[in-house]
Length: 314
Image (cartoon, rainbow, N blue to C red; front, side):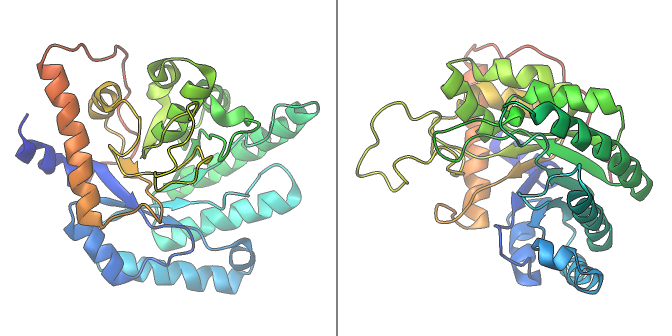
């Protein structure tokens, strides 16, 4: 496959996130679209805005107006602290779904099961699951997909229940709604594979049939070696959200999985390591091209079947 053929698939598959606490202005979104991306992920406003109906509608309408100046399709990232399963969390979740519908977002990324595995957590997770079943019904009526994301520790420390993608896949299967799927975060899985000393593919392959969205970013895995004092990174941080090719993520193993699937691929690259959208598009094409070069040289891609994306084609 040539570089031009790689570029052709970018508008329909690739997306770029708007960093947390940035507002998606029309000029910003036009630059993302002009760089070859077809999707954008916007951050939700804080709970104080979501919880006030007037402010929630006003803010969502402003996001919709910005999006309508482009042809970009949109994903909303729910507040990272959102936890369904109690009255306050459920009210905030309902407001988040309403916000997504008002803004014109097709997916909502949510951090499900984002609690440490400790005594008493199972009952709290059961309450969350019961609420998610109800919100999946609401999302389905609105034509929205809730995509639950696998996590990784920001710094060395305790993991949450949601670090293993197949655990989230089990929750998706338990609820059984077409409006509840996975956001498979490749960068987070790379950290967990390093911490658990396992092959990254062993974490990813069992979950591919439930994926509605991929998050892609690079990092240095578990960072078991002493940090390079000259490196422009936090010496301990695991979840670095670097551009593709700037870390240790094995693109030659991951890219065939991404290309075999049809779900959107959302780049989640955060400041201060974030180049321009055009540069990010180039780095992504290079990462995909290097994987294709490896395959052409005789390397076998990982085995596993991927279901088609549940996101409606346009």
